[in-house]
Length: 265
Image (cartoon, rainbow, N blue to C red; front, side, top):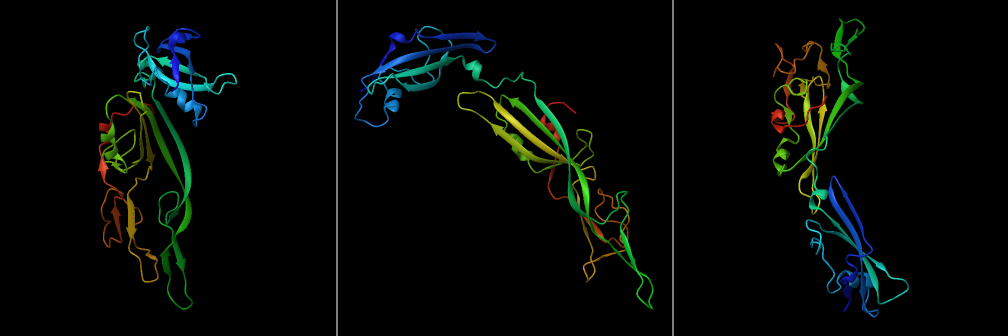
């Protein structure tokens, strides 16, 4: 069975102390590896007496093994050298005092619309021969601008409660936008072994016309009658007589102010 020679545990070392605490690197010689067994480097990691992950240093208080890297030793088939890295636990923690990242970007995508850029309805007139004028609401592939507000920040306590805000709309004004203009599109939680704290990511999509969707009455030919309201109010369930449309929230809403996200734009 492979045996670790701990006499070198305090030799061949590199020690660094900075704002993250102490980082200590050393090498341990391992001998009596069985060349007849597979994976000699794995044998080295399991050598008798070799410090295991998370074990404290025998002399320097407050630091623990955070990585173990076995390497071949010269041309020997029965020996190995294992590099041990000790670090203060605080050096591995997500620092809650790190400045959070808040970024905003805009993008444009193609959408179907029956509106001119000023919001008025597109009406297509038609004059059949020998008949009176007819008109229908036209539909085009238009371009629309959206915004994305992203956050990266640290939470020390379990943030899984934030997941209930995913796919919600803002039920009241938030970040300069009226209600229903923000949609929570992403929430990510990252945690690494041995690291206290949680690294968070959240993204919200902004639509100045709100994320409310409008369903229109359509005639047998699939067209929208031309007398449907010119200006659709996104906060009104139905328009004035003869109605012709109904507004529908595509998702539930929530109070985004309760998320306590970092300030930014």
